[in-house]
Image (cartoon, rainbow, N blue to C red; front, side, top):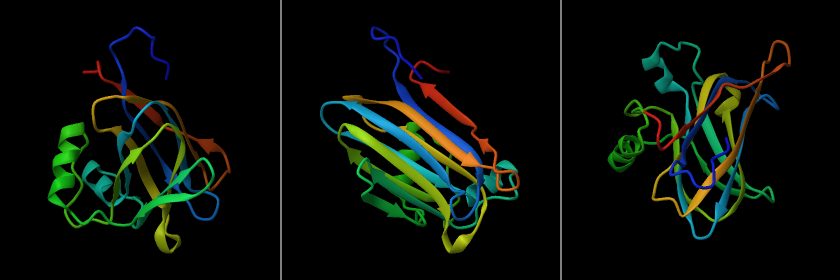
Length: 171
């Protein structure tokens, strides 16, 4: 996704849905933040709440891990716990609500300029359809400028991505 330098638009959401397998067949999304200061980012790894959208083969126990460009683990999450402040944040950024008490994952992070990787896999070697989302939360002082979501079809080994991007001028 490439924004024109003089455009008032900005990237506010990236998402990708795919089958999340086990071992090396997990979902991986890379993103880069440019600029100065910290960017507040909401990252969600969704499985159980996909059931409300008629997806039956959802990832039962999502586990979300965020890495920096050196391969260091910055954060990990399993189960968002239905916290009300997170529900309000989901609404603020335009994200669909997660089922209360579900094992879906959610992290809010303040990240400096750099390259990052979000990995979504199933805890306890579970597998199923997962959705990985990255949202800009606060006013842009920096900009997520690149995303590279990837997943692998377990049956064939074929790479598969279903990425989407939303800019601030989208309806």
